[in-house]
Amino acid sequence: MLKTGDQYRDSLRDGREVFINGETVKDVPSHPAFKPIVDVRARIYDMAHEEKFAGTMAYEKDGEKFATSWQPPHTQADWWAKRDWVNMVMREIGGVVTRVGDETVGEMWSLADGKDILNQVDNSWAANIDNHIENVLRNDIFHVSANTDPKGDRSKAPQDQDPDMLLHVVKETDTGVVVRGAKYETAAAYAHQAFVKPTIANWGNEKLSDYALGFICPMNAPGLKHICRGGFAGVKPEADYPLSNRVDEVDTLLVFDNVLVPWENLLFYRHTAAATFIRGTLHRYSAYMFVLRIMHIADLLIGTALFNVRQTGLDKQQAVQEKLAQLACYREGINAHLSGAIALAQESPGGFLMPNQSLLYTGRVLACSQLPAMVHIARELCGGQICVTPDSAAFQAPETAAWMEKFYSVNDDWQSEDRRKLLAFGRDLMNSDYAGHKLTFQLFAQSPPFAHLGAVYRNFDFDNALSFVKTAAGLSDRVLGKK
Image 1 (cartoon, helix red, strand yellow):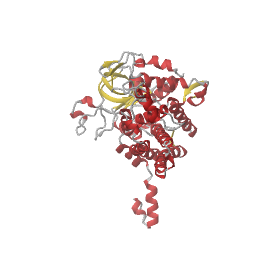
Image 2 (image 1 turned 135 degrees about the horizontal axis):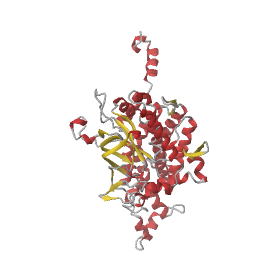
Image 3 (image 1 turned 120 degrees about the vertical axis):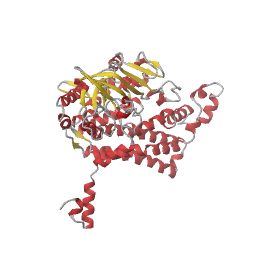
Image 4 (image 1 turned 180 degrees about the vertical axis):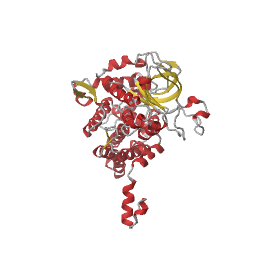
């Protein structure tokens, strides 16, 4: 079943408790803070039904159609199809959105790779994972991922402070477990369900922990409250802030106030080995879609900067070309890592095809660590006018319109209105509240920088370098721990 946009909107009218700016949200799809991003997600659903997009957005199996985004990957072609899906979506919506489901569903495939670990305690959990992967695919479920806790005082163990700082089980019942605590999740208020999992934690020597659990939670579960940050949509005029008003992804503090998790939704529980495994392998698939988004941000930076220097004739200067080349190297560096990760893809323990892990994680470090510098290069190429240009009202008001046309018309190709639109877009992409939020989001959305580097350390083949140096230096086998 492929949902339509209207079916998606209606599915959000399910009694969920949502709050924003101190206000109780009565209808998520029509609320000013949520409507633009809900419309974006609805547009993605509708694209799968339109002839122009259907061949990329969906695939057919056994006479049924399914979303390409949810297809578990078994071949390189599956991954190239997913890449085409993202490319088509980003261009159609005219911006970059991250949490629309394809970037988070891969975490379920990672969990499926750990079935052997889960079966050590309870073999019903593996079946639950398979059922939920199939449910997302067959029912076109917008699935997100709740990960980060409020954490509290991280110098203390969870049990030595307010226990709700980390999500935990408070009791078991015949029908499931009851949980308390909180999680942060982007897009939760307008998604269908979340994979709720333990945050990074030091499990110590405990074999079991009430904090080591993972489960599927519908976003309208009784006792679940969505407390959202104030959105950027509608705060300032859309003509001046086109991205803020169109593609702001609203973040949510999910409060679990004695929420019942049925046994069939439980994926692991009181199993620290499973918690450790999922923290170490969580992004082995989803990092691909995440980093691919950053490549599209690079395209936006390049296009915005290049338009700005071309319209004023600066693109002929060597210094300008060098900065554009830096942006191009950054973009193509991401592209090379992603392409190589698929070309050298590896079979996973669960039988899926996962991107080459070393290339994927080193690509994520490149993309995230260098993004602030690339934004600054693009900002420099656009010039100071992105921060000093008057708002759109000045271009319309009778008293000032003529002056704005005079000073913002560059030549026959670039008249004042196009010039204004480009500068407004650049300001919103690089200088606005939305731009600052987006930059921070890309830094922490999957995990903090130290965890990015930790993933590289765990997946890079150090043995190859050691073997090379051993041979080149004439060292004995003993240096490799061999007799």
